[in-house]
Length: 343
Image 1 (cartoon, rainbow, N blue to C red):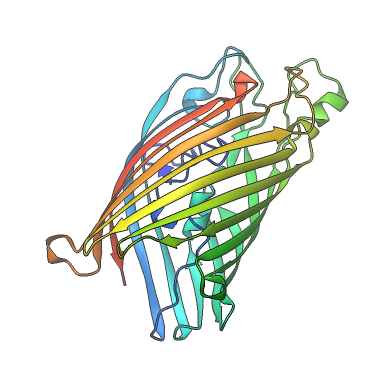
Image 2: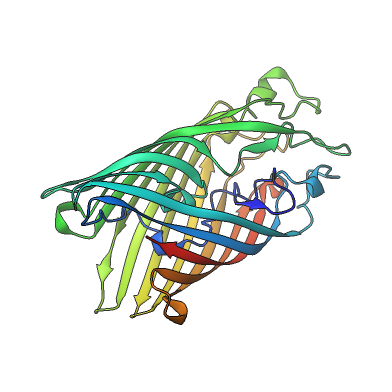
C-alpha cells in the first residue's frame, strides 16, 4: 500500500521491520492456498483499504526521516494516512481441479512482502492443493537508504529490485497440514552502507544488503466446533546476504484463531520470533541479534445492508522488533478499513 500523499514511500513494510507487518489480512495467516472454484470462468475479490499507520524505524524511507542525528537512538514516531487496493483474479480451467491466478496473494502480505504474483493452483487427488507462482515485482520495500548510517546530512534513497518464486501445498492427504516456500532475491541499485564512515573495504563488505531469502512455512489447521478453528504454525527464514553482518536466520512460531458465523468472521494471530546473525556489525561491534513480536486482529462483516458479495473489513496490527543494536529497533501500528467485493 502506498501513502495517499507520498506515493513513492513504501509504507507497508515498516517492518522491513523484520517482516512483521502482516498487513492485517489475518484471514489468511496460514500456508493454506485459496480453494478452486467449482465453475469454469473468472472469480476473485477486490478490497480498497484506507488506514492510519504509525511507526518508528531508522530504515524505512520517508521524507521525514532523510536526516538522522545519531546511530544510537530510534527515529521519531511517524504517523500517516495510507491507502491502496488489494485483490486477486482467478480463472478456473477445470472446476475444483485447475485454476490460474494473478494478483496479490495473501501469503505475501502475511510475510510482509505484498507483491504481484502470477501462477496456477492444481488439486492432486490424495495429495493436496498445489500452488506455484512467479513474483516479478513487490510493492513494498522497493526503496531503501543508499547509506542508512549517514548522520547529520540528508540520506538518499535507492531502488531495490525484488523478484522471486512461490510454492505451496495445502490440505495435505486430506488433513489441515499446509507447507509453503518462497524464494526472493533483492538487489540494491546503490549499496553504499557505511560509505560515510571511516571503515575499511572489508568492514564495508560485511554491511552489504544484497540478499537471497528462503522462507519456509508450516501450518496445521485444527477445527474446534462448527464455527471455530485454531492454526498453529511456524515460519523459518534464511537470509543469504552478501554481507556477513546481515546474514542469518529468523524463526517465528505463531498461532491463529478464527471464529465465523453467518455474517461475521473474527480473526486473531499472535507471534514471537527470534533472529540470529553470523558476524558482528562493524559499526557497533555487536551482533544484530534480536526478537520480534506482534498481534494482528481482523473483523469481516459480509452482506452489509443486504448487499450480496460485499463485505466490510477492519484490521489492526501491532508489531515490535527489539535488536541488540538499538539502531535496528522498530515499532509499527496499523488500523485499516475497507469495503470488499467478491465475484
